[in-house]
Length: 139
Image (tube, rainbow, N blue to C red):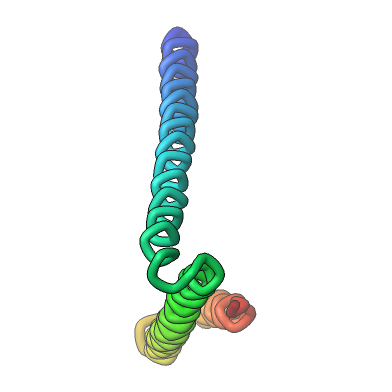
């Protein structure tokens, strides 16, 4: 048994090193990808400005681009707010179902157990569980 311990530790540390190496590689690739997408976004804004400048003038073209980007940003924030509200409702329903099932399990416990000591321990455990579930904070 003691001979297998160093081998298991070696395998575990090798796996951890691999996880960190992959995470570092993925982070670097995501950074490079983000820089490429950011550059493409800026080039698209410059191109839109260059296209609109002869039609509306440079100041009006810049204002049109800024207004459209602000509008898109507001739409994204509204969608995010709606999704957050839906997730909060879903989370509340899930918590209510969990509490209901725990209360049902606790209410049926006296019929299942015959021992008074076990009943007290189970009731205290259930009460501690309900208190812990009730203290879970919402964002």
